[in-house]
Image 1 (spheres, rainbow, N blue to C red):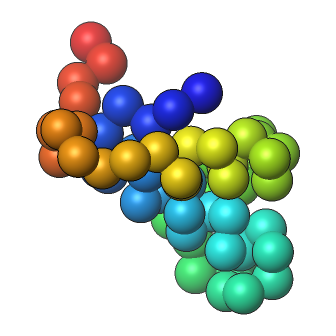
Image 2 (cartoon, rainbow, N blue to C red):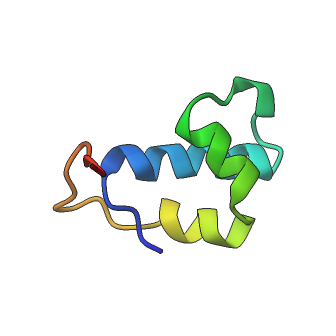
Length: 62
């Protein structure tokens, strides 16, 4: 599933780094922490690798 915003892509990248052991899990907060717990490394990689061009900074899910 591709990221819908730059913020979502960035959170996925942070969660992916923690999943790979590049950063500490305790450093995660908010969306990246829940992504770490609920998504596989493959799902995070797919979301983090989404091209940024044309993406909004944030998207309201309401």
